[in-house]
Length: 208
Image (tube, rainbow, N blue to C red; front, side):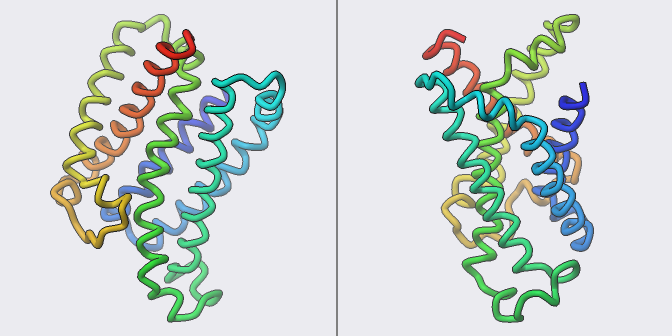
Protein backbone atom coordinates (compact mmCIF):
# COMPACT_ATOMS: atom_id res chain seq x y z
CA UNK A 1 0.00 0.00 0.00
CA UNK A 2 2.90 2.33 0.76
CA UNK A 3 4.30 1.73 -2.73
CA UNK A 4 0.95 2.55 -4.29
CA UNK A 5 0.68 5.74 -2.22
CA UNK A 6 4.16 6.80 -3.34
CA UNK A 7 3.24 6.10 -6.97
CA UNK A 8 0.14 8.29 -6.63
CA UNK A 9 2.24 11.11 -5.16
CA UNK A 10 4.82 10.74 -7.93
CA UNK A 11 2.16 10.91 -10.64
CA UNK A 12 0.52 13.90 -8.94
CA UNK A 13 3.87 15.72 -8.82
CA UNK A 14 4.46 15.00 -12.50
CA UNK A 15 1.03 16.37 -13.46
CA UNK A 16 1.60 19.44 -11.29
CA UNK A 17 5.01 20.06 -12.88
CA UNK A 18 3.56 19.99 -16.39
CA UNK A 19 0.89 22.42 -15.19
CA UNK A 20 3.61 24.96 -14.38
CA UNK A 21 1.74 27.73 -16.25
CA UNK A 22 -0.69 27.77 -13.34
CA UNK A 23 1.90 27.65 -10.54
CA UNK A 24 4.28 30.23 -9.01
CA UNK A 25 7.72 29.67 -10.51
CA UNK A 26 9.34 29.04 -7.15
CA UNK A 27 6.73 26.37 -6.37
CA UNK A 28 7.49 24.73 -9.73
CA UNK A 29 11.13 24.41 -8.67
CA UNK A 30 10.26 23.11 -5.20
CA UNK A 31 7.94 20.48 -6.65
CA UNK A 32 10.67 19.54 -9.12
CA UNK A 33 13.06 18.78 -6.26
CA UNK A 34 10.30 16.84 -4.49
CA UNK A 35 9.69 14.83 -7.66
CA UNK A 36 13.38 14.03 -8.02
CA UNK A 37 13.42 12.76 -4.43
CA UNK A 38 10.25 10.72 -5.01
CA UNK A 39 11.78 9.09 -8.10
CA UNK A 40 14.92 8.12 -6.16
CA UNK A 41 12.77 6.61 -3.40
CA UNK A 42 10.61 4.83 -6.00
CA UNK A 43 13.67 3.26 -7.61
CA UNK A 44 15.13 2.28 -4.23
CA UNK A 45 11.90 0.61 -3.11
CA UNK A 46 11.54 -1.28 -6.39
CA UNK A 47 15.23 -2.04 -6.89
CA UNK A 48 14.80 -5.77 -6.22
CA UNK A 49 12.05 -5.94 -8.82
CA UNK A 50 14.22 -4.07 -11.31
CA UNK A 51 17.04 -6.58 -10.77
CA UNK A 52 14.64 -9.46 -11.43
CA UNK A 53 13.95 -8.08 -14.91
CA UNK A 54 17.48 -9.10 -15.91
CA UNK A 55 16.85 -12.74 -14.99
CA UNK A 56 15.41 -15.01 -17.65
CA UNK A 57 15.26 -12.26 -20.25
CA UNK A 58 12.19 -12.34 -22.48
CA UNK A 59 10.96 -10.00 -25.24
CA UNK A 60 8.45 -8.47 -22.84
CA UNK A 61 11.13 -7.83 -20.22
CA UNK A 62 13.28 -6.15 -22.88
CA UNK A 63 10.43 -3.73 -23.60
CA UNK A 64 9.98 -3.03 -19.88
CA UNK A 65 13.70 -2.50 -19.24
CA UNK A 66 13.99 -0.22 -22.29
CA UNK A 67 11.01 1.83 -21.12
CA UNK A 68 12.46 2.17 -17.61
CA UNK A 69 15.88 3.13 -18.97
CA UNK A 70 14.40 5.81 -21.24
CA UNK A 71 12.26 7.05 -18.36
CA UNK A 72 15.35 7.43 -16.18
CA UNK A 73 17.19 9.18 -19.03
CA UNK A 74 14.32 11.61 -19.66
CA UNK A 75 14.10 12.35 -15.94
CA UNK A 76 17.81 13.12 -15.81
CA UNK A 77 17.54 15.53 -18.75
CA UNK A 78 14.56 17.29 -17.20
CA UNK A 79 16.18 17.81 -13.82
CA UNK A 80 19.56 18.79 -15.26
CA UNK A 81 17.85 21.36 -17.49
CA UNK A 82 15.71 22.49 -14.57
CA UNK A 83 18.77 23.22 -12.47
CA UNK A 84 20.32 25.16 -15.35
CA UNK A 85 17.15 27.26 -15.78
CA UNK A 86 16.53 27.80 -12.07
CA UNK A 87 15.77 31.36 -10.98
CA UNK A 88 15.42 30.53 -7.28
CA UNK A 89 16.72 27.33 -5.70
CA UNK A 90 19.83 26.85 -7.86
CA UNK A 91 20.24 30.34 -9.33
CA UNK A 92 23.75 30.78 -7.91
CA UNK A 93 25.02 27.50 -9.39
CA UNK A 94 24.73 28.44 -13.08
CA UNK A 95 25.67 31.40 -15.23
CA UNK A 96 23.22 33.85 -16.75
CA UNK A 97 24.15 32.63 -20.25
CA UNK A 98 23.36 29.03 -19.37
CA UNK A 99 20.06 30.05 -17.79
CA UNK A 100 19.07 31.77 -21.03
CA UNK A 101 20.22 28.96 -23.33
CA UNK A 102 17.32 28.23 -25.71
CA UNK A 103 18.32 24.60 -26.37
CA UNK A 104 18.28 23.79 -22.66
CA UNK A 105 14.95 25.56 -22.33
CA UNK A 106 13.45 23.58 -25.21
CA UNK A 107 14.75 20.32 -23.75
CA UNK A 108 13.13 21.18 -20.45
CA UNK A 109 9.84 21.76 -22.26
CA UNK A 110 9.98 18.78 -24.64
CA UNK A 111 11.37 16.03 -22.39
CA UNK A 112 8.41 16.04 -19.94
CA UNK A 113 6.03 15.20 -22.79
CA UNK A 114 8.28 12.32 -23.82
CA UNK A 115 8.23 11.35 -20.17
CA UNK A 116 4.42 11.44 -20.22
CA UNK A 117 4.45 8.73 -22.91
CA UNK A 118 7.01 6.67 -21.01
CA UNK A 119 5.17 6.96 -17.69
CA UNK A 120 2.03 5.82 -19.48
CA UNK A 121 3.91 2.81 -20.88
CA UNK A 122 5.39 2.08 -17.45
CA UNK A 123 1.93 2.14 -15.86
CA UNK A 124 0.49 0.07 -18.71
CA UNK A 125 2.99 -2.73 -18.18
CA UNK A 126 1.87 -2.93 -14.53
CA UNK A 127 -1.83 -2.46 -15.25
CA UNK A 128 -2.77 -5.95 -14.10
CA UNK A 129 -1.46 -5.23 -10.61
CA UNK A 130 -3.30 -1.92 -10.58
CA UNK A 131 -6.58 -3.51 -11.66
CA UNK A 132 -6.39 -5.93 -8.74
CA UNK A 133 -6.61 -3.00 -6.34
CA UNK A 134 -9.94 -1.92 -7.87
CA UNK A 135 -11.69 -5.25 -8.34
CA UNK A 136 -14.53 -4.15 -6.07
CA UNK A 137 -15.33 -1.26 -8.42
CA UNK A 138 -14.18 -2.90 -11.65
CA UNK A 139 -16.88 -1.42 -13.91
CA UNK A 140 -16.37 2.07 -12.53
CA UNK A 141 -12.58 1.70 -12.85
CA UNK A 142 -12.81 0.57 -16.48
CA UNK A 143 -15.22 3.39 -17.36
CA UNK A 144 -12.97 5.95 -15.67
CA UNK A 145 -9.90 4.69 -17.53
CA UNK A 146 -11.61 4.83 -20.93
CA UNK A 147 -13.04 8.30 -20.22
CA UNK A 148 -9.70 9.68 -19.03
CA UNK A 149 -7.91 8.11 -22.01
CA UNK A 150 -10.37 9.84 -24.38
CA UNK A 151 -9.80 13.15 -22.57
CA UNK A 152 -6.04 12.59 -22.79
CA UNK A 153 -6.18 11.83 -26.53
CA UNK A 154 -8.02 15.12 -27.05
CA UNK A 155 -5.45 16.89 -24.89
CA UNK A 156 -2.56 15.64 -27.03
CA UNK A 157 -3.88 17.66 -29.96
CA UNK A 158 -5.23 20.56 -27.93
CA UNK A 159 -1.84 21.04 -26.25
CA UNK A 160 0.18 20.39 -29.44
CA UNK A 161 2.20 17.65 -27.76
CA UNK A 162 3.64 16.47 -31.08
CA UNK A 163 5.10 19.92 -31.76
CA UNK A 164 6.39 20.21 -28.20
CA UNK A 165 8.25 16.92 -28.49
CA UNK A 166 9.80 18.16 -31.75
CA UNK A 167 11.08 21.15 -29.72
CA UNK A 168 9.21 23.73 -31.75
CA UNK A 169 9.02 27.19 -30.22
CA UNK A 170 5.62 27.11 -28.55
CA UNK A 171 4.88 29.54 -25.76
CA UNK A 172 1.17 28.79 -25.41
CA UNK A 173 -1.51 26.47 -26.75
CA UNK A 174 -5.32 26.47 -26.53
CA UNK A 175 -4.91 24.04 -23.61
CA UNK A 176 -2.74 26.41 -21.55
CA UNK A 177 -5.53 28.99 -21.59
CA UNK A 178 -7.83 26.59 -19.75
CA UNK A 179 -8.34 26.48 -15.98
CA UNK A 180 -5.48 24.79 -14.15
CA UNK A 181 -7.57 21.83 -13.01
CA UNK A 182 -8.78 21.20 -16.57
CA UNK A 183 -5.25 21.43 -17.94
CA UNK A 184 -4.00 19.02 -15.26
CA UNK A 185 -6.80 16.61 -16.18
CA UNK A 186 -5.66 16.69 -19.82
CA UNK A 187 -2.12 15.81 -18.73
CA UNK A 188 -3.30 13.04 -16.43
CA UNK A 189 -5.54 11.77 -19.21
CA UNK A 190 -2.54 11.71 -21.54
CA UNK A 191 -0.70 9.39 -19.16
CA UNK A 192 -3.78 7.16 -18.94
CA UNK A 193 -4.12 7.17 -22.75
CA UNK A 194 -0.61 5.77 -23.23
CA UNK A 195 -1.09 3.38 -20.31
CA UNK A 196 -4.22 1.99 -21.96
CA UNK A 197 -2.48 1.65 -25.34
CA UNK A 198 0.43 -0.17 -23.68
CA UNK A 199 -1.92 -2.43 -21.73
CA UNK A 200 -3.84 -3.42 -24.87
CA UNK A 201 -0.63 -4.04 -26.85
CA UNK A 202 0.83 -6.00 -23.93
CA UNK A 203 -2.29 -8.15 -23.86
CA UNK A 204 -2.34 -8.59 -27.64
CA UNK A 205 1.37 -9.29 -28.19
CA UNK A 206 2.39 -11.03 -24.98
CA UNK A 207 -0.97 -12.40 -23.86
CA UNK A 208 -0.82 -10.69 -20.46
